[in-house]
Image (cartoon, rainbow, N blue to C red; front, side, top):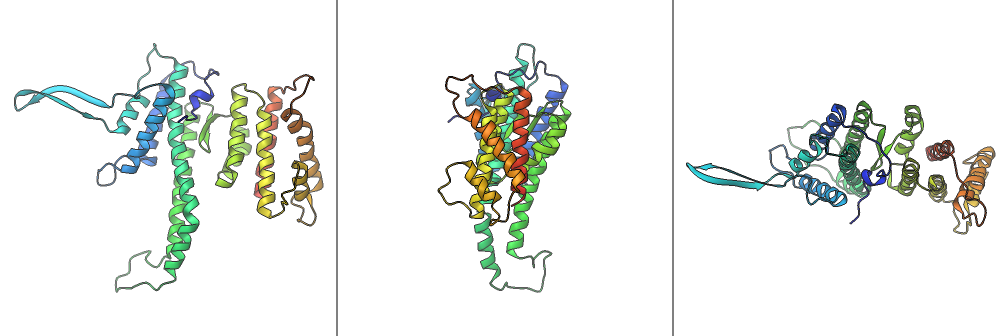
Length: 357
C-alpha cells in the first residue's frame, strides 16, 4: 500500500544542504516525544504494550517500504560470548522502537546525501504523528455512542459504601468527556512541542492535520495558517484539509495549479455549511447558488452582500479561470506572490465562515 510521506512530496525541492548538531538534536527530541509521550513501548509494569508495539511496527514497515529498505536498521542481533565457560552464540530480536531509534538518531556521515537524510527522518516523525492523530479521530467519532451508553448507566442508582473515593460522585458522562478532552489536549501539546522543536532547529516546517509542510513567514503562520488548521481539524472538514494541504504541497514543489485546490477547499467549506444549515436543495448547479443560500435574508444573512461580491469575484475570475481548460488561449499562470495570496485568501475565508457556525 502506498503511503504519502514528506520525502516524496518534496523530493524535487532542495531543502537541506548540511546536517549539523541542531538537526541531529531534533531527531533525538522527536524520538523521545514519540516514544515517551505518543506511543510508549512499555507499560507502567515494564511490559511491552501491544498497541504501541503494533504502532511502531506499522511505522517501520510503511516507511521502509516507501524508501526502499527491507529494514530501517538491523532487527536481529547475534554475537559470540561465553556460557558456563564455553563459547556461546547470543541472538534475538531488538524491540521495534529500538530499531527505529537506531535509524532515526543515526549519526550523519559525509558519504550520505544531507537532503535525503533529513527528509526521510522527518517522514518518520510525520507518519508517527499522523498515526496518533488518526487514532484520536477514531476515538472522537466513537464519543457520541460512548456518552449515550454512559448516560444510560448514570440513570441507574449506584451502589454506595461507607468509604468515598475522591471523584466517585463524578458522572460517567462527565468522566468520559474529561478523558476525551485529555486525549485531545495531550496530543495538541505534542504537536505544539514538535512545531516548536522545528523552529528551534531552524527548519521552516510545520506539522498540522497529518502532514509536515513548509511554512511561509511566522506572522502568516501564526495569524492565518495555524488558526485555519485548528478550525478544520474535525472529520467534517476532511476534504477541506486534504485539498488545502495539496495546494500547499504543489506551491512548495512548484507543481501545477495550487490555486485550483485552494479554491476547492473554499468551495467545499461553503457546501458543507449550507448542508449543515439545511439550506441545500440538491438542485444547485454551481457555487453561485450556494452563495445565494449564504446571502439569503430568509436564512439570516450568513454573509452580507459585500462579502458575497468578494467571494463571487474569486470564483468567477480565479477559481473558474484556473479550474477550466483555456482551449487555444494562453495557459493562465500565477506568479508566486499571487499563489500565496490565493491560498491565504482561501484560508482566511474558510476560517471566517466556519467560525460563524
